Every structure is written in C-alpha cells, then in structure tokens.
Image (cartoon, rainbow, N blue to C red; front, side, top):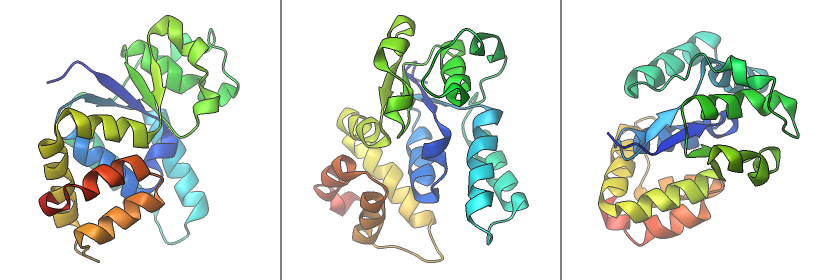
Length: 189
C-alpha cells in the first residue's frame, strides 16, 4: 500500500458522483484515503438537510460501506490538536487536526480559502481541489485510473451511463482537468 495520504474534507464527500469517484480511485491503493467520523457526520448532516428524499439509514449504510471498503481509513484520537489550530473557519480545525494526526500529505477540499497554505506548511500538508488531486492521480497511472472509472461506470445500473455521460457528470462536479484527461482515454472507460 502507498504511503501518500489524503484526507477528504466533507465537501468532497457530499456529492454522490464525486464521492463515488474518490472511493473508486481510493480502492486502487495508489494512496491512503482518510477521513473521520466527524467528517462523515458533517457531509451526511448537510445532505439530509438538503435532500428530503434521502434517509438517515441509507446514508449510514453508505458510511459503513465506505469505511469497510478502505482499510484503515478512519483517523481517531486527533481531537487534542484542534484547540491549538488557527484557521479562517474554526469549524474546519478538525479536518486539519485529523490530517496532522495521520501525517497526511494533502487535504482534498473545494474550500481552499479555509486552509491557508502558510498554516498547513509547518505540517508539510498540501491543499488540493478534487480536480487537481484526481488529475495528478491520473498522471501517475492512467491505466489504473481509467480502470477505476470503468469499474465505477459498470457499477452504475439505475440509471446506467455511457462513458461520455459519466464524464459529463464529472465535469458538472467541477472536474474539468480530470475530464479532459479521461476524454483522451475514453475507450478505456
């Protein structure tokens, strides 16, 4: 298993297509995917607030499946770092605390302004959008990345998607860099 470690912020786990893509590439074991129970609570709470058609039970099942799919994904005992951290939004300190605890290399988030590089630098933690993170993973091993996307697409049954249709969804999720790379390898998807 790889040593490169990424902590996923709640905002990247909230939308199902992005969460599914991140999980698919996490299962390639090119990196160690990490999160906390609190990160799970945050994205599931927000989803329940926004979507009346989704049940708490369904999300609890998703959380359990995620935790079962990725070995050693849960960061624990990170709370002692929280009070010493200073971020623009104090509610995000738990994410940085978890990243420090598991010696993460990167926090994957859409909220770059909430994690200033100068605050993360002493901990040797980078910050990346999901698009930058995923496009770097593609560059490391295009065949493995495409295989993960193909498996994701094959799992989708109701509805099913063509490769192009799935790429359109990824583009709508804010992944233009990744989609452009995947379009060049669309026959592998």
